[in-house]
Amino acid sequence: MFNILISSAHAQAATAAPSQSPFVSFIPFILIFLVMYFLMIRPQKKRMEEEQSFISKLAHGDEVYTKAGILGKVTAIAEKAVTIEIEGGAKMKVLKTHIGGSAASLFATDKK
Image (cartoon, rainbow, N blue to C red):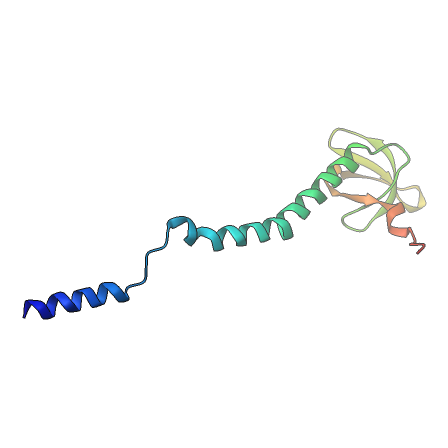
């Protein structure tokens, strides 16, 4: 009777899957993180750095657009705000963080 129990225990041990190391089980998570980093995080970080660089280089007379879609020319620059002149000589203050980019880049044509 004990021989039957022992032989069935050996049979179960032989059919059990070998245990994986903890590192092998984390490989899919590492691969997913790498794909997310190169497809989402890195491009967003690069865009933010370019935007910060543009904002820091703003100068009097630059034509810009806001994230709300307003086009204008920079007339004054403060620490956190920019005064832009829009159509008809009207002026408005806009936060620097709401400047979208150069208006010249909007109207540039590709000559390929």
